[in-house]
Amino acid sequence: MIDHGVALPHHRLHVVPAVVALAGPSWQREVWLDPARSEDLDHTVHVLFDDFCDADDPAPWLGQTLRTQEEVELTAHLGAAYSAVQDSLGADAPDQAFLDAPGWSAVVTAAARLAQVLVANDHRALVGLHDAGHHWPPGPPGIGPAGG
Image 1 (cartoon, one colour):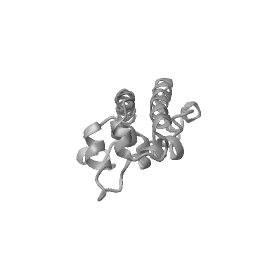
Image 2 (cartoon, helix red, strand yellow):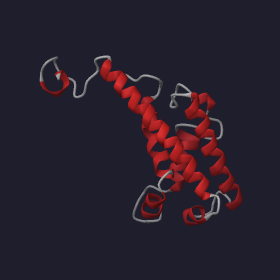
Image 3 (cartoon, rainbow, N blue to C red):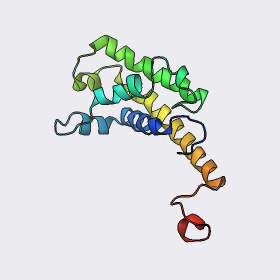
Image 4 (spheres, helix red, strand yellow):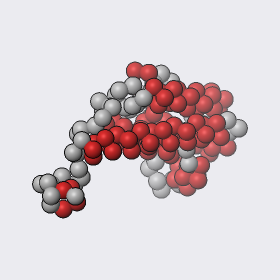
């Protein structure tokens, strides 16, 4: 996969939706609290703290799954906001308790700002790929959408 700005673009494909999920209180209540769904807060936290980033210490992920220093700083801010809620509740508290916690709005706000930056940076990278001649779907020049 060709990408401008990250060595692990496939990993970033997990980070961005996790941040978007943390930015959406209605999504959290609709999906995370539904026992029939497999996505929950625990899954989201594992993506951002364990698997594809470390929101407690995101600096080493610059150039890996995070594109810019701004993304690193905003990820650290999100990590701090989440950790504050987790510290007040305990790691084993149910999702409902997290969503109802007084500090949860700070998590949502931090995630929303980070989501905005992640998506804007991905859009810029996509434009850069397009401008460099990488079109989707791939095909011969001049034929179909890729050649247009």
